[in-house]
Image 1 (cartoon, rainbow, N blue to C red):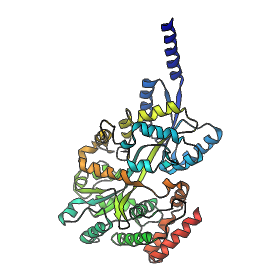
Image 2: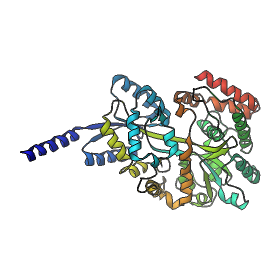
Image 3: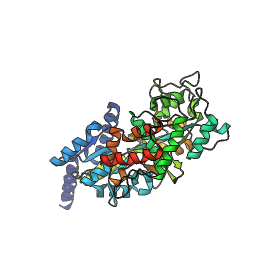
Image 4: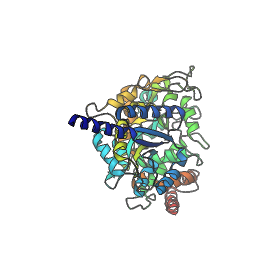
Length: 443
């Protein structure tokens, strides 16, 4: 009789598991990425009996849809989202921060990139679990720097030394900066430089902190970068084209350029050599993720991190199981959606601290041709590319000012003021004061 009862209990439990369905909202809505996510969901169901419904949501509609679902008490169990929303959603009660924190601690805090965790810290907990991200990179012609015995351009002084040694316009430019105020790229590059020099958007109390000596120094440094660049309004297109043409010594770009450097994308050919499919430029390129300004010896990197949040309406235990599954058994499948833009924010496991990094380096990148990342870039280069995740930072997000940052990006407030400074309409001191007033008015 006891065996029969025990069997009925097991069947009842398994039947309950089979009846569970988690809903995951994801902004990775491209068909190939949806196929990978649904395959992950199927693997999870086979392992646990818990179904996962993967629902695509366009990123620019995500905030509106989450707000409406929260008001109706119909949030999904899980939501994949960028850093832009995570702290704000936690403050509004949309995310279950205790559940996310439990997952991080069960997986091991030490297995995650420190910067990715710090950006998601709120009220002693983590707002959500980091899944992947990328850090902006300073690319430099390592071969030319080595030939002139120049130091790696990780400090402002070393960047300027590289400009002085290499700048020979119009044949060759020591740097290609962002100067087009209509482009978000300008905000991204300038923010990266400002973070490196210790400039914060707000303090812990939420007060705007842009009118500072560190900002004045940052502006003066940025003007030197602009003076070493071609004339006109420049953005990501010109910096990429000039670098791929072998006419630029240093640029700042996202890691989505990694496959292009290796001649794997026909729409962005390497024109520096006769063969546009060669990986010669990749071999000659060095990378710096953490820049160091004179006012910030620790340095910083500009990061875009994505998170998987467990919501306030979730089936918590089932949702936790899925997040842990995604970041262990299915993690390399997840990263394979776009390895050049999905860096592993979880490096490995307690047993093998570099397990996921090693697996990620074997994933293929490219569009018209594909090759494993590690076949193009050696381990020491891969490590440099990933190093920025440890000091990953952004203006405002970690202090709950995501809405303010969104306004800055939408209205391009900072680039417009910096451009006026570059054009000589403002002094550095006047530009810093103008930024302070303009950002305060947006709050």
